[in-house]
Length: 344
Image (cartoon, rainbow, N blue to C red):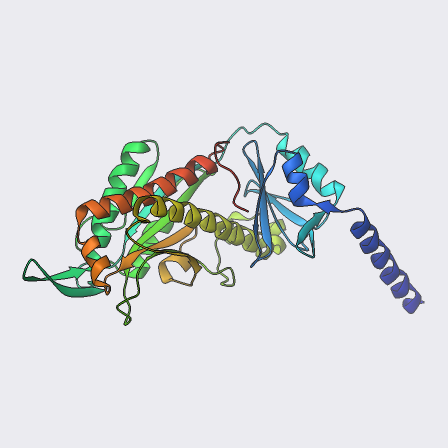
């Protein structure tokens, strides 16, 4: 009798799977037709769709979706078929029903943390060059601080309603742990996000290495981003799933920030330097920040041409403007502007 029951169960699951496959449609095409914006990270196999101020986050093969980073809902699990994300009509109708709700508390960026790397006894990368016949040592910590303070001034002026925080505003040493503690201690409202931007300069044994790049946390790295005490006791079993999906949503948003900043830098300093792209790595300040976070490398101090550029305040102002424009574009998009298209 037990064997028969198992066979019936297996047959039922098989038929259900076949019916699901036969009645699914492309999420990309459906999203376009319904005015939704789709984001997809192929590494973590997670995605997000947006419309009229709401977000729905999902993962391949998972029937649980996260609504506006706050609520959980069960629906049909999306599935990857070939190079397409396939969903059922129920998934789409659930999404449309959610998007039709009036957004009483729209999401916004509440705070931006700017972290000028190194400082004090820690100079970071450094190199000495001859400038006008004099030996000048170019230190990463000085470049980071200049750009950090210029970025702070721009953001403070443009967004008086947001908290703009510098981890350091002078030449002092702050440990990596203290930097992330500062970031994670910033208080914002439930519907507000915090962004973390760490400013650095690169160096290499290869003196010809050059260019700027933006790093985000590898999707393969697992971390805890939700306070378990904030979850109702009867939902503790859902904590690993909710934490994982929130973490992956942070990764998706970090990738978006990185792309916007890369575009901003390309527009401002692309003629003088090389775009090395966006990359994933487990930097300490990024992996220990419970929020979307990126690390910007402005150039190589080990490359004489690039080092001399970064020793010029006019060039640093251009680089700062590039970072600012990228952040501003992301903020506008995040806060539901329809002026930006999706990053596919």
